[in-house]
Image 1 (cartoon, rainbow, N blue to C red):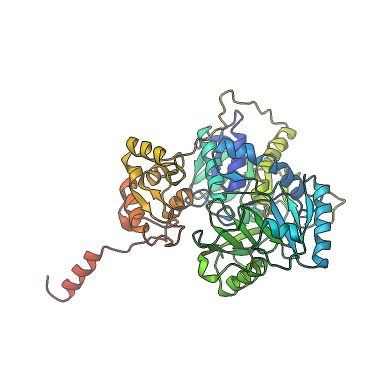
Image 2: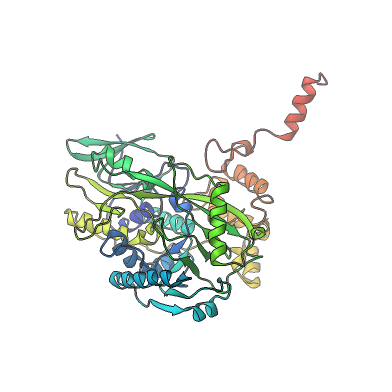
Length: 505
């Protein structure tokens, strides 16, 4: 007989992980399932890492309400989870009178949404603050509550804190269908068997529409994947004058191609926004790279192609749900609901930008929905909101580094030269509350392989460490799960096979 849970959360991206983390405050048996081999491998693994201030979303929409609510949650959340976060503020830049009128509209929208401290500054002032901007800038909207975080670290930390507080996490566990008793959901069918619960939270991201349709909910709702491509610049070659986010004036396709600082020291350029047919199509394209480069260059002319060290693509879960507010004519809002026609489901869908920002507020809304449905949520007396981060060698001073090496010599062996990642850090992640078992899992947690050489130096050593610590052959080590193995066979075996063919053995 399968264990019965109180709540099953489908999807361990930033939303699902934070839902599980906040629910773990209560005396509940919680199961978090994820179809991939690690948490945060979907939309949470490829986005702008921006904490949006909240002036873009349509006033009164779920997007606006959760965005602005969450902005105030991020400082405490980042402190509790031990993740990097900086409230650096952001700018929307205008280059002519028409774009200045758009800034006025954004300012008014931000005021309606309750975004504090916004103001429009003149061209001279914005050029003084960021001299690398194009010289014909005539003004900018300044939002001091905008910020940057690390979506990889945030998702991992939230899921780890959930696990530390009793949540059961099952990876490589794909949702297949609901188990129903009449109109009530009593569990889920997965590729790893059946699991039963009184409540199921649909936080399936790009696949949230398919999940809700299995329950007969919102048959008209569809998610169209919209791909955004990005370029990463070498931090040794280029930096903005100040840590910030620079947006162009938005268009019908979205917020536009930004140029922004990251908490890892690089500058990121992107994304574009193009609908694609497949929910797995994260391809980067020549046309996309050109589009991004053109947009970034228009904003900051000083960037050069020779600074590019990486490119990647991510997908937004763009839905067609109307706002629950009848006074708003808006059809791309977040779904945050308990449907009337099905019992036992908390339904989250269309969580695109600003979904990363809004995630903690969405989690709180899930709790409020459960309370409103009659759940008597009793707080755990021993709930611990703190997840202590593991040492990051490059962030320590010389004295701290020497002390760490004295305690564990593995921290004295550099594996990734570009990012100064040590063997000790890699070992710590392999043996963490949610073990890193693939190269990309190590990469997301430690930043190895993200520098100028893009893994050319560290990959063989990381493969060897994973092989040793996981007790598997080097040929079984993967980049991101089954089917992405790095190695086919040992070089010596090729020589041996050749000699056998030649009749020498």
